[in-house]
Image 1 (cartoon, helix red, strand yellow):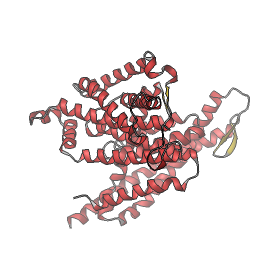
Image 2 (cartoon, helix red, strand yellow):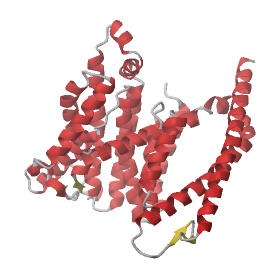
Image 3 (cartoon, rainbow, N blue to C red):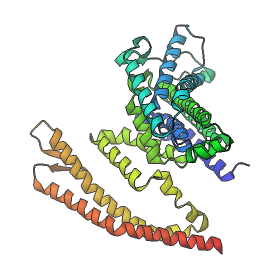
Image 4 (cartoon, rainbow, N blue to C red):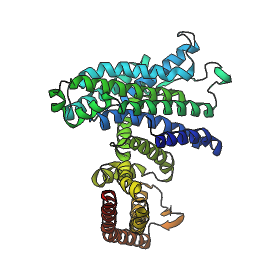
Length: 420
């Protein structure tokens, strides 16, 4: 029987998706929300491989991008009656079927190996398809890509998908449908056996399961949902370029899933939201934002391998057993957060000044940082940022052990309450 709490959370999320566009007036913010919806589907699809099946792919953008190209050609064909008319509402299924087709073909070969061999094969296919985008120009459009127009004709209830708000609701609807389907797959025997292949393939074979067939099926289903996301991308931006199948796109989705957390279903969702927001807003604030993204990724992998969702779920036993313990932990967590922010302020200041001095071509040494105009030719901004960084680092050294102690004490007390 479905968990009432999960059903309530799901209903709240759906209600939020419905009213969210009514709360904003910025077309840029609406565009960012569209990108978030597409990224969530793609991240969840990728996690079907990595988190559920233990298959690290360096080229899963291939199925995202190929489905986008197929979708763009189908829409263009409908404009000239070369293809029978398909409602744009259902066009994402075309991308999903295209992703499924390529996933079945490529997956049959690549999933015959696991681990590092599988990762290298996926990398090879990514390079192969990226090269083909500049060779098979009639399909991929070369460096210019393929343009399309999502406004084919008026559909149900007068919908044309001309306005971005209509595209938002299309993406939101498919995001909810895809998320429900992928979550349901994790609860099926197939989902459990995918976990078994990830954790102990030898034992899975011993009890009579074909590990290649399980990996192949997981790969194909993941490619279907990646293709669904690629079709929505083509509808959203009305353009598909060679970069959609490249290593850059594959790397971004990998970072999203790792930062969000591969061990929990909500992890890729958190990662997709965070990285898309950073890409949309932080890239306009700092030209060195990719450096920060790399540092975030490295820190998560080193110190929080479970990702953001893992950090949150660490506290779930405490919340269920004794929520008041969370308030007792708040001072230690607040102190650690404060020292971290001080250290970050200093480190970011140094990075921004170094980047500014190394890239500026004018004699102007003025840099606006934190809303303050600084003269990077003077020694004082450098000393202040260095002092903030050192003070924050020392503060982290003092406060982080207290966080660990507070967490351990709370967990010990929660376990004691359960046993009694």
